[in-house]
Length: 431
Image (cartoon, rainbow, N blue to C red):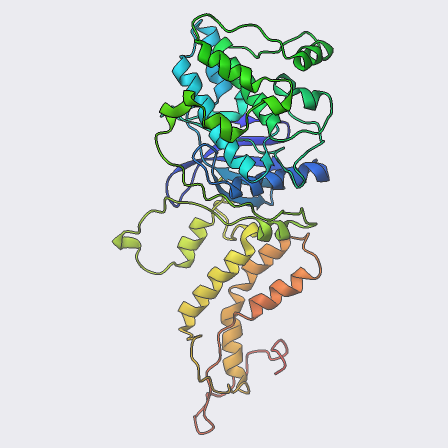
């Protein structure tokens, strides 16, 4: 475990397919309100929409039925967060260099620009939500309360008090400039090792924020850094720069080392459904970029054993069970269809299919006996997903039946095997 919140826990996990490490955020849905559940899905939507080097990238999302949790797999920042770095400097009585402060400020502003271009407001920008990498770069994360503004302004009060803008404190409508104020607070905190506005109670903090007065930075920092912070901590929103204008300031020119190819595109809203299977079908597709190449030893077609191994859950739950992850039913059915095609060598692409002779009960019985091997697996899925609606259960069963292989036609002159008299016929389907 690498982090914990009110309703979520973040784990450091390793993916079997590529042997790479990721961060897995597990949000327990049991005691969440409808609004909180919708916020969790909104984080998935926004993460999957943004493709920017300064924002934590989305990898995959799925439902863990056993714990009734939404699991979000994300890029792992391997060097902690910015708050931990600031606290470390305060304990060791050291300071951050001005070059590092400006570099981090520029990268956060670039990440905010990617959000603001899609009319997304972060709404909870703080040093604890800025994650560090070992190469010195930072990535913006924790989009749980981020919001898409349809009309340009938001009214809901949210965010951390130390970093909240004056308009949020006054419960007034706000826009992307509120994130710029929060960035000013983070930049000041990196230099002074404490937030710019502090008080003993909320009333005192409110008065300081709406006045916009804060202590001067230590003398070791230049006037340029003072000016950057002053631009962002303007009480009047029209005096603050936009995220784009901020990144274009001459103070940040030396940090523009490469051109950002932003391919972000806002996905459609994910509405929280009534059952978990519907959630699994609505979640964005997986986005892993580092697929491992297969070696000569595993160039053969996937077998049942390899598919079961790949379906082992990341957290280790049910890793020795024969049933697949119940949240991936659609993927499991597709895998089973592939296995049936291989087992019976059925050519589904044949254009000139002849009319099959279903009168031979022995042929039908043989197919059903083979099919019964698969039924226990499907029954396990049904037992672990009792919350399925009555409409969805017949659909899945019909989908399963439809995967029976096509029966071969028997010529009228072809000699047939005698019926197996010991085989009961009462359970055979009526043709």
